[in-house]
Image 1 (tube, one colour):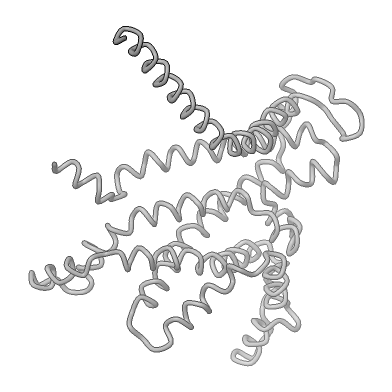
Image 2 (spheres, rainbow, N blue to C red; image 1 turned 45 degrees about the vertical axis):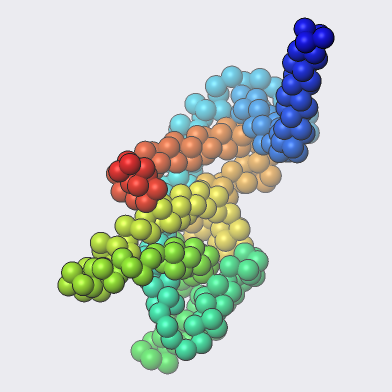
Amino acid sequence: MTATAAPRRSQFKLSTFRQEALYGYLFISPWVIGFTIFALGPLLALIYLSFTRWDLVGSPSWVGLRNYSRLMSDELFWQAMKVTVVYGLGRVPLGIIVALGAALLLNQKVKFVGLWRVIYYMPVVLPPVAVSLVWMWIYNPRYGVLNGFIRQVLGQEGPRWLDDPMLVLPSLMVMAIWVAAGRNMIIYLSGLQGISQDLYDASSIDGADSWRQFWQITLPLLTPIIFFNLITGMIDTFKLFTQAYVMTQGGPRNASLFITYYLYQKAFQQFQMGYASALALVLFVVIMVLTVVVFRWSRAWVYYESEVVGGGN
C-alpha cells in the first residue's frame, strides 16, 4: 500500500506545480498581449519600414540602407538633433533645480502650504495644447502679458519671443520648466518627508548648520529622485512634439525644429513613411544609449540607503 501511495503524491505535486504555472501565465498574459500588440509589433514594423520606401498608399518597396545614408547627409535632421539636444541641456538641469527649490520651500511649516502645493501642481493636470495656447498669449509681442509688463516698467517694446531664432528655444524652455516643476516637486516632497528627523538632530548636536545638513544629508538622500527626474526629463525632451506643433511649427528658420516634429513632417505631411521610420529608429537608439549611459553614470553619484546597509552587513 505504501508503494502505490507514493506515486500518487508525486503526481499530485506535479499537477499542483503545473496549476501554479498556469495561473502565473494567466496573470501575466494581459501584459504580454499588450506588449506584443502595442510595443513589440510596432517596433518590428518600424524596423522593416525603415528599409523601405512607402508613401502610405501603395506597397512598401525595399531600398536597403538608402534611408540611413540619406539621413547622414540630411542637414535638417542634424539641425533637429541639435535643437533637441540644446533644449534638453538647458531644460533638464534647470528643471531639476527649480523643482528641488520649490520642494524645499514648500516643505517648510508655513501658512496655506497645501494651497501653494496645489497651485504649483496645477500646470501638470492641464492639457499640453491649452498650456501652449496660454503661453502663446503670454509671449505675444503686441498684447501679451510679458511684453505688457516690460512696456509698463521699462517704457519700451519687448522682443518677439517666438519669432526670434535666438529667443524661441529659451522661451520654450521656460514654459516646459513651469509645467514640469509641479510634477517633479511632488516627487521631491515625498523624498524630503521620508528623511528621518533623527539624522538632522544628530548632525545638529555635531554642530552642522542648515547649509551643511543640506549638502551632507538632504541632497545625498534625494539622489535617487534626482536620478529619476533626470531620466524622465531626458526622455520627455526627445518626445517633445505638442509645443513645437502648436506654438512654432519648427520656426523661425528651423530654430525650434525638434526631432519629433521633423519626423511628423516626413511621415504625415510629406508621406515619406520609410524615411520617417528610419528617423524614429535612430531616435529610439539614441534614447536607449543615453539611458544606459546615465544608468551607468548613476553608480558614481546616486545613493541608495538599502545598498549601503546591505554592504555593511
